[in-house]
Length: 362
DNA sequence: AGGAATGATTCAAT
DNA sequence: ATTGAATCATTCCT
Image (cartoon, rainbow, N blue to C red):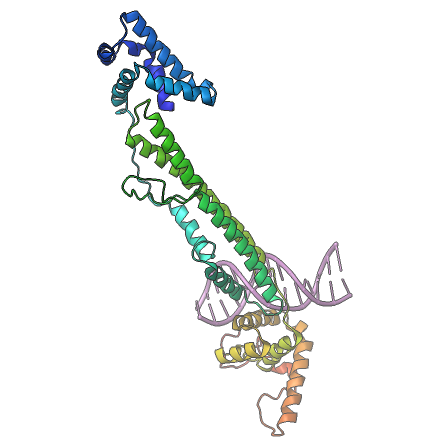
């Protein structure tokens, strides 16, 4: 359309003087005087120019009339010639766009989050993995989970239905028929619509297949950018969802009393070296029904907080020391164990400058 | 409401 | 990879 108006305006009525036109005009059967022909051409051009002002029916009729006009072949040939000359100035920019790194990033992320990619399996797997990383204690964990999953699949669904609209299938030129094996969506529908329009227009003005191709690629680029936006906002939505549901800091639950007792028991009975081995951690995790990393976190926090303010923990230390002492003496009457905390806090050598074959003390 | 307690995360050092 | 330290975000307690 732009081409049309540009063509018309730049060459306008001056086309009447075009050598090719003169030649074609001589082929014409009717028309006796040159003035009349000029008038004819002017009329035709005027009608073409104003065709968009008409109502649909009128325009249709007008188009038909123009197509049957005796001067039509001549004018068409002239337009072809002019086009041939001007089309050279239109750079045949056939830029094969390289895969956009940002788009790839978005795609990868959506895939990782289970939004894109295969069916539900991926989504729940990702959710499970994420939740596991967040370290659920159990309890209401499962409800949080399904909540998260529901929201995620909601996003997923919206994403897919939206994406489908703008997706363009590879056009496999099977013989000659475009359009048959295309998925029905906004992009393809619009593309075929434009292509049909151009093809229809090619009856009245010269349009090369290259141009149609170019137009199609422009449309595809536009739809691609829409897709990009969709992906971007989907990513944002997922990130927000993730931070709301899966950031463990947001969903912190204190361990139950029994668990903290077990942990404290171990800590204070190993106060000289409160670094449980891998196996010890595993056992503690099992006993407390928490994960190993939670055990590690707990000990990490405990060590640093104990060290920071030993005084504050004195009472607690005494309590657990006494408890283990009682259990030790009651369970086994043998007066063994160098671990006898008769003076409880004295065993608290963790930060104190004791002789220890342990790790750092400082 | 506000501070203490607490589990988790981050980051640098080892 | 593990740890200490600082910090965050939530829960508990008064």
